[in-house]
Structure formats: structure tokens, C-alpha cells
Image 1 (cartoon, rainbow, N blue to C red):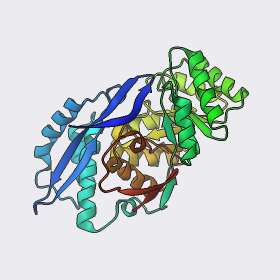
Image 2: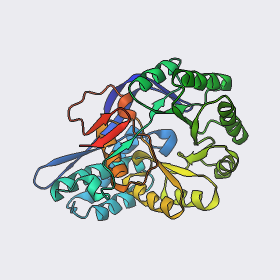
Image 3: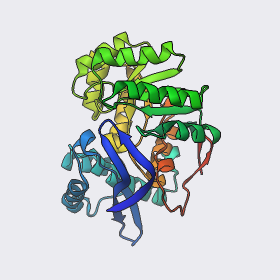
Length: 333
């Protein structure tokens, strides 16, 4: 288990954190080369913990002995069969497997995923903290144009005041509201409407209601003045299929630690077939994990919205940078 301190306390409607906790997973080839992946479980999203990820990896390991890394999809299927309800654990194993495949094949990951574009523009997340406006001012000075603002404080007036303070600090910024399941349906629509009436440029509303209440999520999508995205509600390809066939939700937020890497690729196909928009997001992941998500985003070209910013929140020692960043632009090395 690896712990990385955060620059600033990270607070959402679901809790707070001062450090990011991850499991480092190593895959060793027959020739002795070792490749790694990272798993960042978040219990309220997938039900996983650091301990459950380590147990899952230990149980899967015997099934991977002798596997051919050049047949990575087949090996991913073995992982999925043995850990169907552990997407964060699968993510770490899949990441290590893909790193091994890339090294042995000579292919870059973004090429494997399609090689669509070389760079994307990310937002930056502002948590539920007292110095939110200061963080917004700093982010704007660094060139960030889109803020993903966490809401869900029990004091809704405090929520509104904080978003307005962020807007005052960077009035030209586009704002994405992320409630992490904190609202009732009508409350979510009212919250966004009030902000827009006060001149705040709201781009979208993410996961406004509890994750298992698809009916409520659909109601918000039908009545909201802005796009509504599912996050915690979209954990599996089956969830994605249900969302696009039974609700009016406008888009899906995918994360490798929430869906698994193979799951992300499957959900992309579902969303494209249903003409729904896609966002790629992250947990509190290091630059190494962000690089994997960036390869998927650049390779597939499937994402209209990018939320790959957790490396900006972590106070991690940087060895290999893995990708380049210029303001909001993340570019493949």
C-alpha cells in the first residue's frame, strides 16, 4: 500500500481525505522484467477497500501464471471472470498487463487504443473547503479554464455561497457541478437554476442523486437546464446500457478505477451507439495512473469532457513525468 499526501484537504459530500491511498500491483514476466499497475479503491463507489484489493489480487494471481501478455484481451477476460465485482483491483492488474504488452510489442498505449489525438484539455477540481475561492483564483492564474466544483454540504446556502465565491474569483471560468449523490431530484434542478440566474456559467451537473435511483437521475436529466452526467450510477457496462435505454441522462463519467480498463472500453462503445456524451475522470490517482487514462482519452478520442486532475491535488515526488502539462492541456510524451 502506498500513501501520498494531498496539497489541500479533499472534501466531498461523501467524506474527506488528507492522503491518497493506493495499492501498487507488480506483474513479472518470464524474462524477469517487471511492470506495475495501481489500484485506487473508493468504498462508497465500488465497495472496495485497500484490503479487499490486495485479497482479490492474491486470489487472481495463480490464474495469471503462464499467461501470454500479447493476448491481453484474453487475459483481461480471465481477470474479469475471477473478480467480477472488483473494478479497482481489475484496473491495477489490467494497467500492469497493458504496460507489459506495450513494452513487449513496441506499441504506445494511445496507439493501441486508436491514436486519435495527441492532447486533451482537463478541468481542475475544487473540493468543499473554506479556501475554495483562493484555489479557484490560483487555478485560473495557472491557466485552468474549467472548474469541477464539489457540492453537497448539508448547509445548501453555504454550497451556493461557495460556488458564487468561486465564480467571483474567476468570473470567466466554466463550472461543472459535482454533487456526489447529495441532492433530492427537485433540489438539484433548483440549485443549478439559482446559480445560472445569478450569472454562473454551469456546463453540466454530475451525479446529483443517489447512485441506485435511476428514476430520479432520469427525472433530473429531463428537467435540468444543463447536461446531467451519471458517475457513481455507471459502474458496469450493464449499468451503462440501463442508463442509456431507460433514462434521459445526457452523459456518462468513466473512470478506470470505477469501471476497470476493459469496462471503460466496453462502455465507450455503448455510449457511442446510444449517442450519449462521455467524460473521463479519476479517483485520487498518481501521475502514473493518470497517464493510463490519458492514453485512453487520446487514443479513443471518445471524451467530450476530461477530468484528469488528481495529480494536481497530490504532493507526490515526481520521477518520470509520464506526460506533459501546459495549463489545462495534457499531452502525451
